[in-house]
Structures are given as structure tokens and as C-alpha cells.
Length: 165
Image 1 (tube, rainbow, N blue to C red):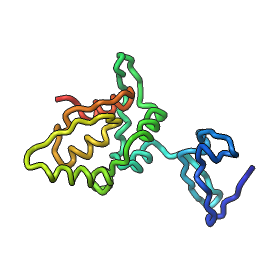
Image 2 (image 1 turned 60 degrees about the vertical axis):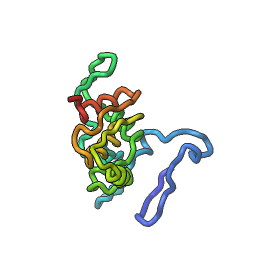
Image 3 (image 1 turned 90 degrees about the horizontal axis):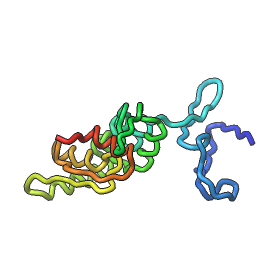
Image 4 (image 1 turned 60 degrees about the horizontal axis):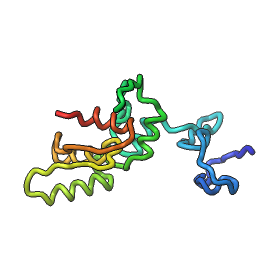
């Protein structure tokens, strides 16, 4: 079925429960899409990993760590787009890149203001380092002391972005 869009209609978000009554997840063709208009036609395209980083409030290139080694010693030649999409999809929307205006940035600022002395952070279920990123924005580099994560690629991102001293 082809649908023409004139710029005034809206379309509902496709969820796992409303795909013709069959429970299924969206596939590559209908997921992470942006509508671009030009003189000739309207085109729907996928968001890039950098655009996903921006939407989540991370600095550009946060998950683009290049070659990395997992915990079993296997070397991965690059940060694949699929690994980056998965890590960003499982992360918090930190708001760091939005001048600290995101919910987690504001929360970390309020928590940090309660301490009369230097405080440190330990992060459980760390993902790609959203909480440490927000914490160190207010408490200084090195104040996020440790992190715990089970997924290989997010562990590698955190190691690159928060190296052990």
C-alpha cells in the first residue's frame, strides 16, 4: 500500500501491538525515521547514530569509539551502527549536550548541591555512562569512581569515556 503525504496529515507511531493486529517489532524500514522534504519528493530516512546521540543529549560521537576490545579479549574493528543504536536505545536521555537542561542533569545538580564536601558516584547498570557524564559535569572529572554493566559495547564506551586513572 502506498500512502501520499501532503504535509498536513499525521500518522500514528507503529508499536509492537498495532501492526495489523500481529504482535511484532518494527523492522529497519519503519524505525528511526526522519521525514525530509525537497522539491521533488518526500523521503523517509533512518536517523544516524549521531542524530540519536543528540536526541538522547549526549555529545556528538559519544558512542563512536572506533576499535574496541570486549571483556573476552575479542577485538572489534569498529563501533558498528547496530551496536551504537542498541546502546543509545537502552540509555537514559541525559541532556548533557543541551546545556545541562535534561531531567537527569537537573537531578544531578540538585543532588550535588546537598553535599557539603566532595562526593563521588558509583553507577549500577551504567549503560554508556549517562549518569557519570551528568555527575562529573557538576562534581568534576574523576568523581564518578566506578560503573557496573553487563553488555559488552556499553562497557567499552564507558571505559573510553571514563578511563581509569
